[in-house]
Figure 1 (cartoon, rainbow, N blue to C red):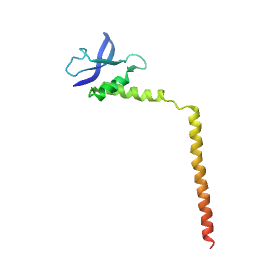
Figure 2 (figure 1 turned 90 degrees about the vertical axis):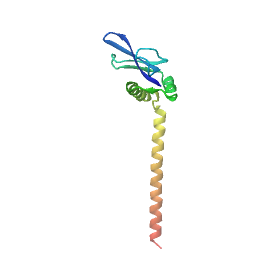
Figure 3 (figure 1 turned 120 degrees about the horizontal axis):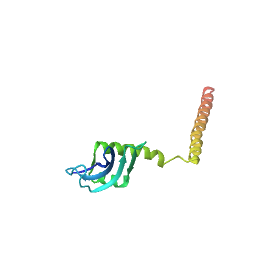
Figure 4 (figure 1 turned 135 degrees about the vertical axis):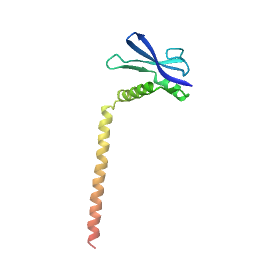
Length: 123
């Protein structure tokens, strides 16, 4: 079975990790199939670099992430979504215009229903 897990690299008391795809029977720092990223917990904020395309490929082909890698993937995707797709100012102004239009239609519907009610009361 394939696992996406951390492989320790770096100096003594200065850990850094590679995010690797490896056979679950292989040792932690042993043979791996592919390096899909790296993680440095000592920087502020911690550095997380993941090739999301390759990680997704391996997940689709049955690789299971370790608990630590699953947390890193979640953290990376949460922070990546905010930065990748900012809302342009033009879209914000269009959204405001569309939001006000249904309110106006709702007011018009209320006025027409009030007029019908008044005309219905006078037979």
